Image (cartoon, rainbow, N blue to C red; front, top):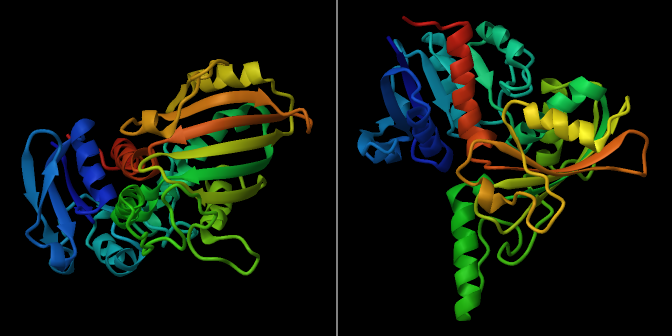
Length: 341
């Protein structure tokens, strides 16, 4: 006996990835529904590699009664309007938007990091999926925090255009093509040209000069991992289609060597350590694309502080940063609370 799962936002990059990962991981399903806005009603999306196609149903008219889990990847607006309706109908919502992440009654979950927090889902029947850049970072930090207690993190991100959705990917492609053929470069989605450029600006600016993306990394990491950790983030959009990278500098309360960190990370769940001190002995976004692991490379000691380490972290943002983490939450929910059969 399996679950009835609705994927909301099924026509978007993350929604399609959710459907692919549900099939890939053989999630126990009795039924799966593709749900999207009314303008996408009737559009067919593929479920896994079997060739099975699902016709999108309208979110505005979808009845969540009798459905076990809804994976939402439709943005904050639809999450605000429809997640409470799904929850009221008895369907547990796992939401990929930022809308519920800092709600004290909504668990913010990365299964490898804080699985026990999922037990609080019954307050709202909603579980939040963290920001893509936060998700991969806390997977990397959790085993190190357990070993030596993190005091401070300084992180710079190199985030792919797929984090801005299909429009972001299209803009990188169109601008790159325009440059090669000598056409004028048109900027629509991003604030400046993204092709052959980097933009130190993701989401809106806040009063203190940081961006909302940087704020998310700070507050979400504190909620998921430890509120005592001090965090400073600089988030940058780069001309990469899929895969976020992060240069992470960590200061610990207790002594930890690079070798000890490598040994810990090598055995940690969800992590693949690829750290050879030679040409090509590290992972880049193009190698991580389509993979489920969070890759760690270039682990080294920071001589400028006591108990400091620097590392390089790469992950497919559409997978661990969004769709995969949501499906892993659903698996965790099933094991702990919604057991079938």
